[in-house]
Image (cartoon, rainbow, N blue to C red; front, side):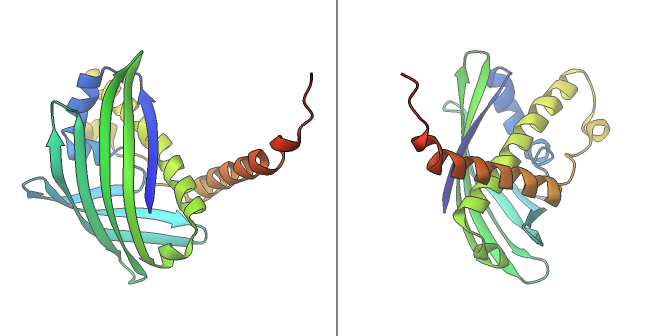
Length: 194
């Protein structure tokens, strides 16, 4: 399943690209993600915890940078893991493309996601909504983290992003789904005020 999203950060593209070069710092911005070991050659061990409805999944696996284009500001990460309780597997190829826009940087993210097991039972809509919520949190955390590093704080002083709250993500994803349904079914029938 291909999920595309984008967000803007009120920082220059060179500063954001420099930040993307430090994968532990990037991972610290994603709620529920934790790098546990640097294997060298741009390969890492880590964990990602996410709640999909009533099920909390904790994946452990690897992530490796397979492509880094400094001139084009493009990075590709191949990640794969298995749920620690044996309830499924996930594989994802993430491509991030940075570009300069008025007032900052636009980050376009394409995630080619393959799920099996418990996570695969959820529909594309719910998975897309949860991904959108996580991307918004990631963007906010990244901007805050870069600002804190610029002020001279160390990564240890900043800490990692707060864990992904299943209830908060679920509520925000449900709200997005309701808005989508409203737009699809009710807006076409609004009277034209002419």
